[in-house]
Length: 121
Image 1 (tube, rainbow, N blue to C red):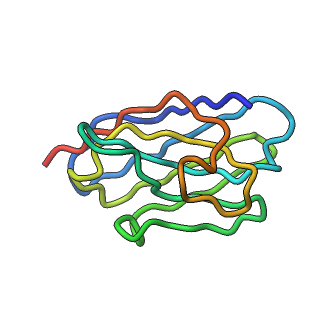
Image 2: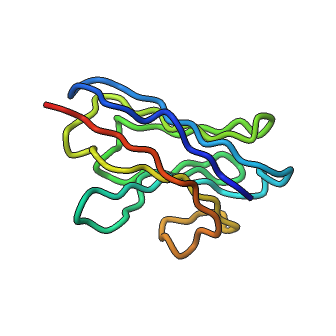
């Protein structure tokens, strides 16, 4: 599976962005999908994920602001980010896992290249 993330950019605090991650291949629906982020000088951290059945799991710091969805017909997963804060600034990565619920980076088998999100105050 090859993943391609896009949609990052520069936004003012309080604004919104929608990231997309397209996957190659015909087995997209078999994978749970996740978004991670990595800020400068920090470790990559789990943000949000969606299972093969559509169940979502969200890191506490983004609850109520971020949401995830998937369109299996388009082999695409989306990350909607609202009420963005400067601390959301990071490179965002999408990833695919064979597990049903995966929140750790080592549970993910495939990674996209990352897209930069910068939130200015």
